[in-house]
Length: 255
Image (cartoon, rainbow, N blue to C red; front, side):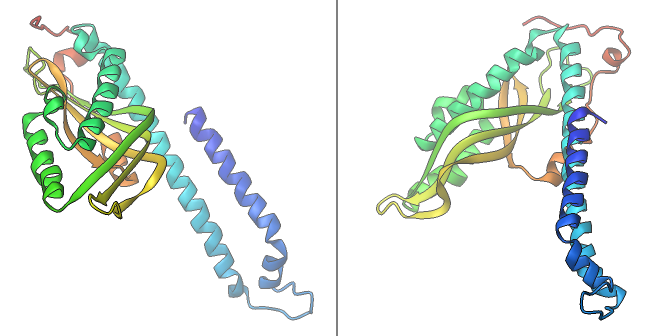
């Protein structure tokens, strides 16, 4: 159990005790210690106890998700360091800068309604899908997507896969959770009225998948973040070459 999860667990316990202390008079009446001498049945306390149990469950689940995410991050960073010994394509600082640059440029291109300028940051398939399924469709419907990134606050690697026999690392996959402060909404071009989303900067969580294509990390997918999806990725074991896991060394071909 890491320190962040321990602190969260302590916070949950203290919060529950605080709620019980505040609500003690109501609980006392529910359990039969009425100030008017009337004895209430024991099951009258069930609504209050149910509230406490739900509260504990929600915070415990949130703590579990955080703990799994942190474990996945540690595991993935460790595996990236191993692969970086064979090729700097997997150096995390370089890769992190690439992801941040991609995030910023894709959002600018999205606002400009054309993804042509970010072709080197996206797979051809994904870029064409996003252009035709969203940007071109919105333009036809008289809509425009307003998006502005204020800051990226977290890039957390969750899952890494490397093709078993691929010497040039083509097809390697990395999934990261990204938290950013940004504004993102869809509005009518003529009137400016909002049809989806809302104005204002807020924290937005998304999951981005990158793959190695022609020797570069490029964007292959963007998903809305959810606790269940984060857990799915965080609980999936990384896929590395067997000889790397056995410390036999990975023969690579330099680019």
